[in-house]
Image (cartoon, rainbow, N blue to C red):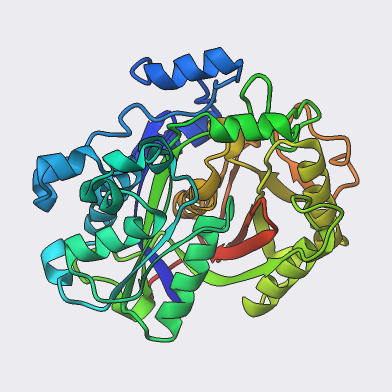
Length: 417
């Protein structure tokens, strides 16, 4: 069994696990205007008339370079995504009861989901002025490789880019590496930092951007994607390898995960209902459970009309015949779409739900999409529910990439006998 031994995060309105859980329980939106110090970003957006209200973290570039013995000049040119992953990986390892010194030279793997490369996009416009520190401080591969280098970790090290499903795909391959004994501990991260208006402009051009910057996942008022940034890190290990100095109970176990692609659809960025149906069924079969045993699904829920509609239809096909409707939610309704980090936001939310034995209120339960009527086998729920501590619970997490790569995972309650 693969378990989540440690976690750390910084999402909009929530710096740390306790703050994230508080935000989720309060059902409180963290959507806001960009921080004032991003003046150039705001100026360009205003000039191009691009809406940039969204989910932002306040201290994306705060970093203790001395902790990692990184020269000040090199740290200056580092992608904030590298800095965030380094910082929160160490926090997650500490949360798991592991020390950086104890892991040096070990077969610890690093699996990072990332897609944005905004700093490189902004820095590399003038090739004549590029220096070595610009290159090693940027590039998606460097996010994972930097962590392995700085902590002297010798397991697999890779950054995976499958767009919005990146970090859930990264978790899938980390689980496989642990099961295949390619590594003994796996650090899994998802990260996204918004420094450029390029993706906002893209979303606007293809008609999927929310004009007011809010993701209203699975709501009848959904009007598109609101962007967000953040970082989340998990420490995974085999159950028998749980650190003795850590907690006696892991946050959750990972019962199964699967990845697939939608293949040829009506257009390149259009999702496939049948691919999503197949994905969930394969994941539940791998986890040796039936759809009626799922206590909750954390949907992808971008808040686009087509995306939400097709996801709801896929869920209804998988969960049809249930006596009690399966609760459905999406953390994007609170923090917006963290893109490559969205799967990690979902995983951490569900791990906290299992850990605290509670299903929170579904945002927009008072205004669900038309398909989520009383006959639907999946429902947004208006009231929080407690989970029995006397039985195991299973929950699903979905993340679907813009290019068609889909991922789903099942998390389960963990108990140590």
